[in-house]
Amino acid sequence: MLPATGPQTWSPPAECRERLPEDYHPITRTERTHLYLDSVIGPQVFLFTAASAGVSTAANVPHEWEANSRGFGYRAGSFYGQTLIANTVQSGVAWARGEDNRYFVSGEQGTWRRLKYAVSSAFLSRRDNGTRTFSIAAIAGPAAGAAISRAWQPPSNSGVGDAALSFGLAIAFSVGSNVAHEFMPGPLRKFLP
Image (tube, helix red, strand yellow):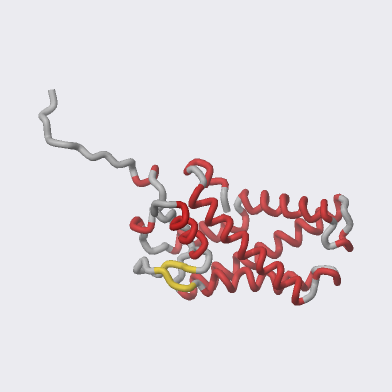
């Protein structure tokens, strides 16, 4: 029989818990490299590319690429190219500035507080000391992807307004991804970008 040692507290191993702000540790070079590679060749990137190309093909936008398998291919290539540029610029700027754009679940209670945290995290990054600051990388990446991808767009989709819309959609996607990370049950989060 084991001796009584008083009340025991149990906590799950670190790998089973959510990544919370208080668990923050500065991002390493290896982690940065893995995050970048996952952001440009991870399975969720290709799923997002195919889904986006499918929706755009069904809507026939841009119309010059037609709503057929060839048009789907153009759109998929375009979405992937824009994602590659955006994530490469974002990762490079984050690396140069020491920004850490990983998402950490808030650990807050209450829907409004958690939602506010998730939305603000699309515009904030952590520094090595764990504090949060405005993220230049989170804006520069989507802006570069939206602007540079206009070079291969057909005339109906190559204007400044189209680039602004594309940038806005990229930011909205980032916000939506953070909200999903915050509220989605743990096991399902691994499928999120």
